[in-house]
Image (cartoon, rainbow, N blue to C red; front, side, top):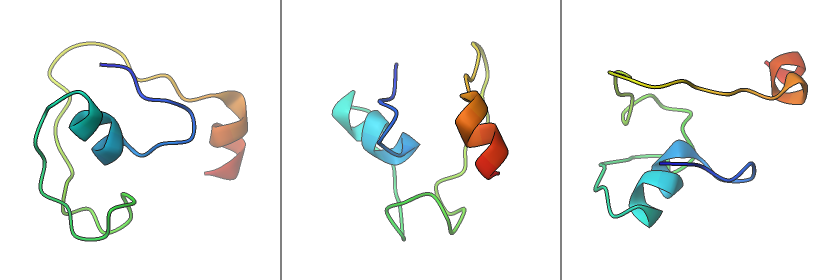
Length: 51
């Protein structure tokens, strides 16, 4: 699954037909937090600076 730069993980999962329960719809509340079992997460340098 790949996420677009402008979308949350929840939206990317739903776009990929993977159901996920969310409360805030933007990844801030932590309700949809999941464990990555395999693969890599890419965070752009711009996003790293913002964090």
